[in-house]
Image (cartoon, rainbow, N blue to C red; front, top):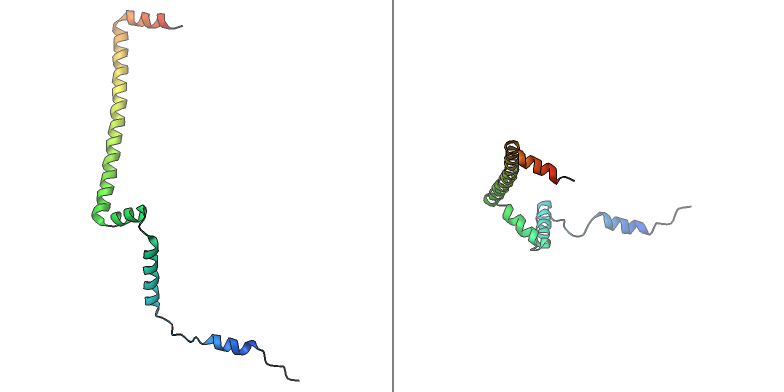
Amino acid sequence: MPLPPDPLDPLLDRWKEPDLPQPSIAAEVWRRIELEEKDRGGGIWAGIEAWLSRPPFAILFVVSCALLGLFMAEVRVNREQRAHSAQLARSYLQLIDPLMKADAVARQP
């Protein structure tokens, strides 16, 4: 006894061969890139990225960050040297003037 034909066979046969011509891969890739660029919008991060994607501005940003880091390091070292100099001056005064040392001891509880 023969089996009845499956009703899905004609549908599957139609599905094997698409009716529409397939676009080329390159055209599809460029279309997706264009859509992605449109979807990004004009947020602040997109503006920053646009500026930093240009080599002169990227170099300027890196140099500015390096100079700012050097300046902050110099400020910190200067502050430490000033504190060290003040400590040396206090130590020198206490060494020379015994009354300062006695006064400091008298003030302690």
